[in-house]
Amino acid sequence: MSGINGAKVDTEHLGLKKRKLSVATIVFMIYCLCSGGAFGIEEMVVYAGPGLTLIMLMVLPFVWGIPLGLVACELGSARPQEGGYYKWVQEALGEFWGFMAGWWRTVSVYIDNTLYVILAAGYISMILDLSNVQLFLIKAAIIFVFTYINLRGLGDIGVASTIFSILVMVAFAMVAVVGFLNWSQNPFIPIAAQYDYPGFVGLTFSDWVYYIGMGIAIGMWMYSGYESMSTVAGEVEDPQVIPKATLISVPLIMATYILPTLAGLASIGQWDSWSTVGIDSVGYITVLSQFLHPGFAVFMVIVAVVSNVSVYNTYIASGSRGFFCLAEDHLAPPIMVKIDKKHGIPYVSVLSVALVNLILCNFAFNVVVVIDVFLFVSAYVLIYISAIILRKKIPDEERPWKIPGGYGFLCLVCIMPIIVAFMGFFINGTDYFVGGMIGIVSGPVFYFIWKRRYGGLAKKDETLYPVNRRTGMAIGDLYRMAIIFLWLGFMGTIASFFLPWFEGDWGNDYYYEVYGVEGLFDTFLYMIKIGTFIAFAVAVVMYVLARKLEPKRERLTV
Image 1 (tube, rainbow, N blue to C red):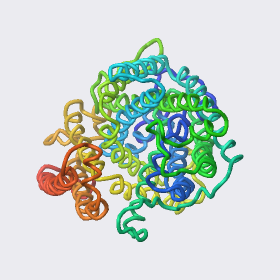
Image 2 (image 1 turned 180 degrees about the horizontal axis):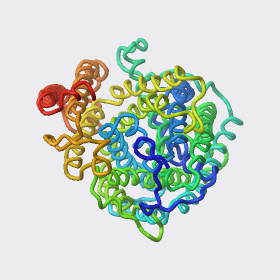
Image 3 (image 1 turned 120 degrees about the horizontal axis):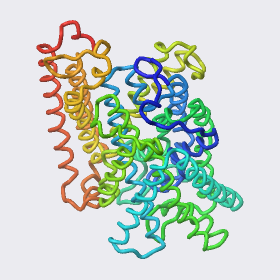
Image 4 (image 1 turned 135 degrees about the vertical axis):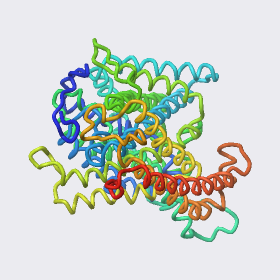
């Protein structure tokens, strides 16, 4: 397996066990990581409109999902190592940016994982009348069961993923077939959601931005995660099966999203009632219960629970390896590298996921999710930049598979999703932007603490990773921190102008309805303005300190 700067290292010395997994098993694991079914698209339908939803489900894969899958295939074939994307960014951009990618994505997975527990329990509550205590006990049971499975190793995770994936695929195939057989209307009409309100005369430019924005926000989440399997590549006997499985998974996931949604809208319609919440909600469940038998409603609720726990199960494996790899590089508490000798699993890291999930599952879905999007999107930007750099840096003989079309096409493949990511920073909502800025800042804060305390990569090779004795960090890190805060200030400036225009007409009413706090939208905007000023100020301070404390030869090397 490849290590620092492409050097070959072996994971056995870490105590990690390698397991023989087939392409089919990896396909099912990736399917669980990235999809687990089409549940969640119901909200996309009602927010964006049926036509826009279908169009974006067909377009987004080519500008967001497929590029990530292709990049994960190329870099995964060249560097099939434990830690995956974290190691790719580290090799391309260095220790600091590698930590940012590893921290941001790992934290987002810890948060994301909790969402699937909350959603699974929510679906169970649709068929059972549960008290708050009973609901928490169900959430805790889900966490305990799948933590136990993960403590037994990738083999058991693969078996569970296979069973879950087949059940979910069969269910959505039934929805597609039944829906197409009962086609009765144009599923693309209306193109955009049009809600009646006083003085409505047609869609304005801001309306189109809103509807497209809401669709992209959900679609980005649905078509994400193709890089996640890379984090356990060091535990797979033949890691080259991961890129092969990814190429199969991408069209499979597209079909799972597009065909049942198209069939559902063409058969039952009622797009403005689609939802994942409420006894009167309409969606994929309705297709089978209406055209086959009402009993299929219970069956599909069970499938919805299975869908969410399948994603939860595989993300425990992926997310727990993030802090394990950071700790192995002396950039996180060393307790995270402890391995269970019997199963060869980083059990402390796995248990840390369970502990965080137990705490966060007590909060509402909308409260937990606000930090998530900003973090994983930021990590993806670093992955795309790394792919462009590593195409020049890694020799072709070390790359069993690469994206066809040459270097120019690779740049296009990577630049398109970076543009989509940039849009995603602003269209998810003001609450997401505020939570995201806080989440991004946590990266340099924890890097500063853990790099100084645990030593980082300098403890492995101080020649390759020299330390600035005056700062306790790597040479040039102050400049890199200045870049992050300058970027946050730039983003905050754009948000200060865009978000009042984007949400100004309805922001206060919407955030009062969601959070129950009067004037919260104005408070969010004020926080963004203050945060923007602080970000620029910190960037200036970091730059001034860097000029004084960094070696002169590093002043232009960031």
